[in-house]
Image (tube, rainbow, N blue to C red; front, top):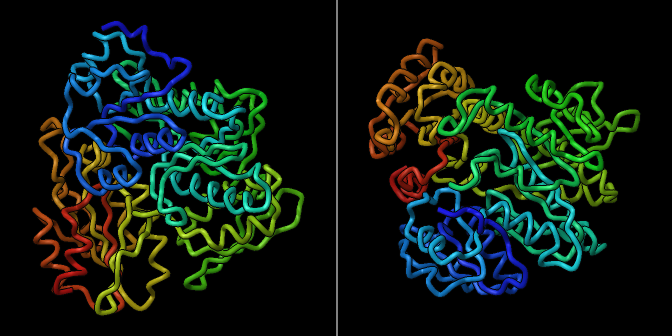
Length: 485
């Protein structure tokens, strides 16, 4: 296959997206449509809600992959990360010699670098193993609120979660900035480098560096090398805002050309989080700028990890010279992201919450975050391991440490274990046994139906049922709320 056509031509009019139902690809399709391009797309198993989300914006997808979908000769084909080189549309694209690119190439070139807009957007890039979506979302909301007063702040963004304030994960604004969630995952079948390598950031946030994505990274050193490659490419005109309590970050940011500012809890950091007070439904805190005065904030978000995300966003906003009172108001009115500590409903005084947590650190911090907000009830943690990493035994000995703040723990057998080599498979049953040795009340379940039956019997008024999965989890949330809970 000739990969020399991997470029973005001038004078684009029509664009086709292969595998357009992913969160990022769907958002990109909408952004391109809003920017005036004629958009077609396809995916395997096109179904709601993404199909209706796109259709409402005038984008109707072909259900299934077929060479016929690109035979009309679009000016550009954008190839999704999950597309293999033997995909019939990719094969026909090559046969026809059509120009093609990856999703991050399109975002970086079409939007950030001036192909669509009269002037180049300044990229605010959010990277790291954890907290990217939340941090990027807070920044986007602060900019939006500032844009009401001065158009230069009116943001564009493409983020890996649905922002409740916008009911969208993308926006095409008229201001100087675009907020991008920068992923370390590989780019496409023709480009195995990380997605974030395709961006030229004006400012960058680095939240954390841990081992994840065990399907593409061999070990932590492999992850660190990828981040180091990215950091080495940041120009001397850029600023990096890095979390101050991550030893991996500390080793990676030395000798960088960028201007470095730290945020976190350390007194030596330029941006210090302090004086946390939980006053439901609010969390109140202060940010101390190095050698400056402290500023009070409040947010409806739960947990120190979210306050650190907010700290990074506040540091970015302050560095963009957004007035302090606008930043304070925006942090207070930020509504959060769907599937991040999202209360799906309350029935018989039992709260059902949905969260995307799947990495051991995210599971631990999410449970720890919500616990103080439900002091009169129990936290019932329900976990479905279904990512490529969580279904592998690489975290088998780490997960037991993640559930110490839960009162009852329900662990489902991974639903997609057949995708993982037998000797590499994670055992939910062993996890439950190990959690029990830590004097926690833990249960193993073969399927979702048995979990629902257990919860209906066990949950009591004032309890929180915290459901953690990166998938639909057999619609367990609605089934509980519409059932006999």
